[in-house]
Length: 365
Ligand code: ADP
Ligand code: MG
Image (cartoon, protein in one colour):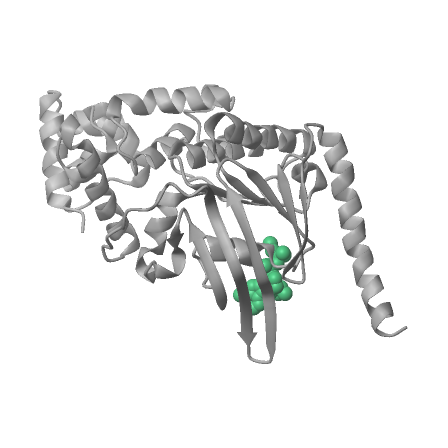
């Protein structure tokens, strides 16, 4: 559990160091004196939305606030991990679990070997993923295409350790994810995976800046580096002017670019994106796809993106085509030209659709 009393005493100490009364701090945060008094006596914790403003006012990092003490530069790494564990344990109610040293060396960030997933319900059984194998090399941008119901989301959930395969093995950076205990899965995801979904990517009561900065607390990033890191990445993603806004105050495209910033800033092994352009108009979708491609090119990110949109897929280096839970075909981008790749993808899809007509005829001539 996070030590509420220690955190309260720390807030109190930092407030006094600034020469403020409880009411002066309350006024700056636009909250009641009573709330400040409750924190300082360890009877309650600040609201999530107040963490960042409070840190700025008291001139401490989020890690320090959670730890309830100032953290010396040389202890930063050790402390950040310890504090992160506490925060996760506290928020998710999970027990601690020792992370083993992952082998960062393998060239394949992801290896999927003979993976199947069968869903059993009362009166039906669905083989949602059927004996799928593939590898994703570091730094590549891979797309998965397939009609609705072909098993794309199931496959992504298996890779994200949200769901367990019925058969087969999945390695993320050399770690067999079946070896991760259930209660440690959330922590594994936070450390090794980045997510960009169609919606619900950001914490609504944090500003865009806070959303990105929060992700950095899981890394041993020194306090003075956080702002420059967020700033430079935001400029790259063209959201630097709106960092102080809340998610509901900005457009869908801006939210998604912020989600990309948050996913990449912690340097995950792989970013999983499920229909990230699904809710965007085509112009905004292109901007997001340019952003994802740029993250691979300039930041060495590895991305696995599920999409049913040919335009989106044409930004990838490689595409896997799923049908009825199986990978039926794959296509590598051979040249830079997106238009040419777009045409090739269309041809492949037509061929796949054609297959379903050919098969019954062959069986029953
Ligand atoms: P996609 O993302 O490609 O649309 P899904 O992975 O969501 O496909 O679904 C693949 C198949 O598995 C579908 O037939 C779907 O009905 C079935 N399915 C998905 N999730 C479940 C579940 N939790 N229980 C039972 N069947 C499921
Ligand atoms: Mg899906």
